[in-house]
Image 1 (cartoon, rainbow, N blue to C red):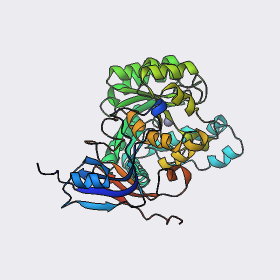
Image 2 (spheres, rainbow, N blue to C red; image 1 turned 90 degrees about the vertical axis):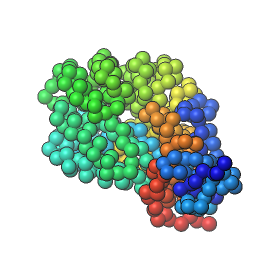
Image 3 (tube, rainbow, N blue to C red; image 1 turned 180 degrees about the vertical axis):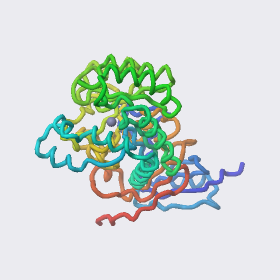
Length: 422
Ligand SMILES: [Zn+2]
């Protein structure tokens, strides 16, 4: 039998993290089982992985005649990051709020002064689709350079039909201009617009927007929170989304304990996100129903809020995923920085945090069978980290150690990284 022909080989890695999991998230006692292979290598044919193992085993198994070779001596190879919670598309910025927050001005006061989400909604409604596509494409490029190869993108800065659809269309168009894969989420129920009550707007989301969003998005999401959307309103929106074929994610228990985690479990949501104030019964229900906990430490840093209790989810057997929560209130494109934060404020180990940023994040988007790990047959989304072990991702922050990004078998980023100390 002739050996399979490789188009790309990455070899001699000091460490190769497979995240091998048979299409499932890593949870409970296995949460940090990243599947390290010392002196690791992998071979790719086209868009797919055809061999993973030690360098000698991989080189024996494939025909390397026409392959591009990447030498990863002294470096770490791991799956591309999956950023499973972003508000990718919007217009404008809110840098003035950094100072206000430092002065202790409450968010509600910032809103009253015309800032906060209402400022972003005004700017986004006024922007053309082309401007939004350009903004999102630039953001995707920054994310890609930081190692993110798949991104979830929520709408939610229109709060009316036309702009919400414009946001979803802009995300789809930006994805076509970028190597990054983008998964759309309809989050019309991100806030209540200033001219409607929550009940009136809930009805508009269900009756008017979901029928239009269902062919533009894969997920439906809602900001279930005190004084925003109640558990009952959230349930009605998410059930209407389900009926229209949209899977479920939910902003749950971020600022107050409202029963969001319980609702997510009850609806068998793919993910529940934020979860800072989730109750222990909500966590247990999520474990039982297979809902992934998406934790977002950059939000805590940016908004000076408490952090989620990742250990409670891991101990209960709930798979934990990490995202950036990129949005105009938390302008962070970096999964490595989110990993570094998770290892400090969420008390996750480096292995757990990296699993959370790859295979578990893929699971939170129903894609653990195709991305998020380096296993045979999976899509070749791969990073070469210029560091001798994976712990550097958690250890060093504020610089980019991602040297090479491979997306669907093609090298799409080659970064100049700073030299490691000897
Ligand atoms: Zn969010």
